[in-house]
Image 1 (spheres, rainbow, N blue to C red):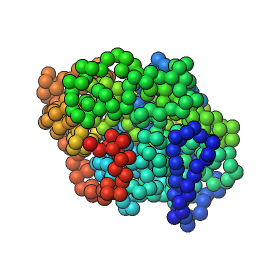
Image 2 (cartoon, rainbow, N blue to C red):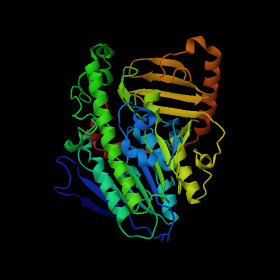
Image 3 (tube, rainbow, N blue to C red):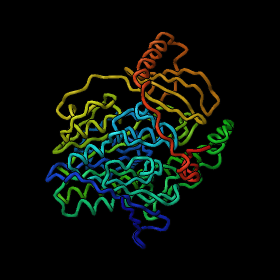
Image 4 (tube, rainbow, N blue to C red):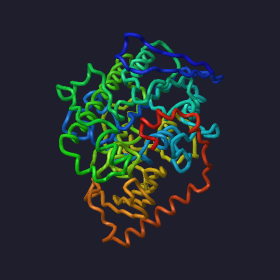
Length: 460
């Protein structure tokens, strides 16, 4: 294993972070030909704030070229509301209750056969860039990657997305015969919603209002101090500032992804490529009195974009059937002709040819004792969640929402639907029983940087 420090003095704006690249030597030879695979996980991007989803601001025009030739799943869900469990599910095709990375510091053991390992064994050159400190080599996420580049600076001073997209653009433009698997996870949509000075006016024609400060003021008091009375001090300017900062970060980050898509097109590598764009989770913007993520199972933290541009796809297709980001790995493997019957997810390839999959319930899980311990299920437009306890002090609570009539989950119906609650409770218990034999992970918390996790909001 080789460690390479990469920095470019003068190439990026001040405070743009420091990278380390871990390089693995793998004996398996590369293939001579095959579709490139680009997996883009835009950290903390909720689905409903993209222009293509009807959001009133032009947050994502940079993605138009990709949207025009993608299958876009407008009802895609993450299995958990924060990074470690959800991203690990994207990279393994296993539900968090299967891979068991459910709390800060949990490490992916070598026993897991990751997406990158499968693809690398089939001859693809595998490269990763992750600016989230919780998706990193020390936690086992580099398994199967020839090169894995991570952020080594302060966590809230993460490198800007332009740094990794430029590296990916350089790779795309370089001559090589072997097919590539590129995985990118930028962080700008994650608080504190950092955007380079040169891009802060791109969305609104001015920088976003700075009145909201991430993990300070009411946000800090509500989430960390459980001072729920601080909600009364949240006014419209505060929320407008929050949304402006978040949306400006989306605009910057999606513009950068658009540059990568353009570069692939110009290099003649887009048409044949498999490109997947998604997110690990969304973000609370006070819809239910909260902020950030990892504090609830509401739709604002679980609904994410999931776009799949299959090789040689030329027209857009929009699918409304609920799907999961656990389906990402089996979809990639299916397209590449790599068989695997051990995954929890399902390939989405049938949708490309006008087919469909039999609907099945989606299970959600969060196990964060100082924040929330809860599980839920989505089935037939009904969403049920069972909360053992949460940061608001609520305990032993059941909630039921009719997403067809109430997609924002603003009207809680459990009191008037006892039979449906009982049926959903039974369904959830049956689904949870499938994962009871899953092994416990190794927790690497002693080796994690305490200040980095705390800055991310991953410690109390």
